[in-house]
Length: 215
Length: 301
Image (cartoon, rainbow over all chains, first blue to last red; front, side, top):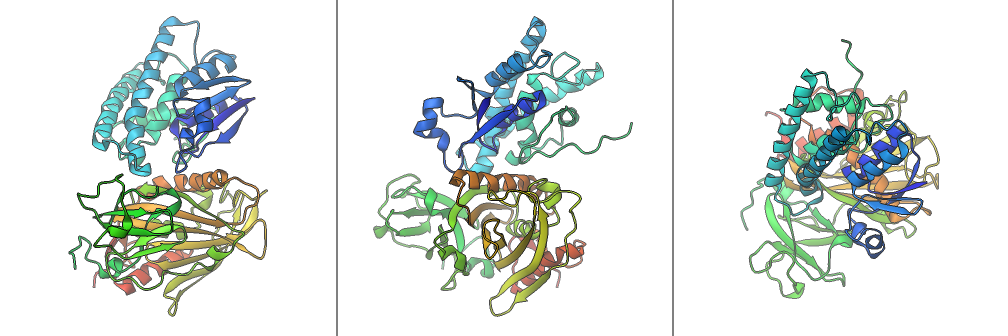
């Protein structure tokens, strides 16, 4: 059984809850008091992850850190159809990896702005917001052109990949860092598509999709 | 008297919370903002504390001996928090007698920054109608959406709002719950920016859990929300109890931050209330009667 070291309000932890829910994988949770307790910097947690970061999983003794790395592992191990992380398609794998790195950029900007506003982290919030808008603009254009070609997801496939999961949480939570998605209509449509994936689950701050509009 | 950016004397004269004592490192300066004024505070770990206006010679994080600080602001340590005032505060803070009961768990669930006016946040705290939609499967669930008739009074001698006989079906009322139940609620608003709610304890039907929200106004449209839990729970670790409350608050946060206008309109014609909003109507009227102007849009006179 997978154990997830988890903080409810963490978008990076949510990525894993989201994928495990979509894959139908069971897991148990060890809550970590990230805030206000800073338990991720405690001695016991640093022995599990010396970087002092969430999330971490323990899958029958295999301990892994880093949200994107864990997405790769979970999809490779538990997705029998092999679509979430398409190991037999080099071009698609390259795209997935490219957007996983992009997701780290979203964490460094949109998530940083949220930590500043909600949890009082001492970050340069204007730089974080500017950086997030730059990334959102790039993703919005990418998704818009994709829609013109009949592509619904971030990567060139007819199905979502872990790149969609990696990018979704901190985009959905961006307004908590003062970053509006008003100007990114293709991102907003893509968010609704993610919310309609079977097995989708919410976290605090993310609401389910409304009823689908009749065409 | 130093000039303040906030000119609302009612608000200036109140006690305001700054931080949970359990989260302040002893002996070093901590900076914060209250009513647009930069303040600093420190505790010494022996039950002493001080609050003062931010100054260059006492930078955040530097060691400090609070005994030698001059120009201190009013100070109160209550309910696990440090409180101060920028005006002439009353001798006492509102009472929460349950805080003295020794078998209760007393925790700061968290202090969160929220992009909302303090009165909008209080009003949301008083509202039961959103439970099934915002706190789905925790504090409410469809089809149990009706807010049943309840009583609201403005207590003149205690100068607070009291909503009683509130009752709501909750699938998971607290960490100590083992299933859905009709839960009784009592709400108090004993301070324009603070509210205390009482709800049935799953452990002891003769007692009530206490959850309070103490809002620290940063400015008219931003708060630091401090959440006191004073609950009966014999089994769960502190972090599990905190996590439950943070989950709830995290669900409210986007709702609070998308309120428009951000300041609470006090004109009775500004927003159309329904029956379930009785306590909100009383709250708005009470703020009007007090002459509160900070964080609100006062009614036209």
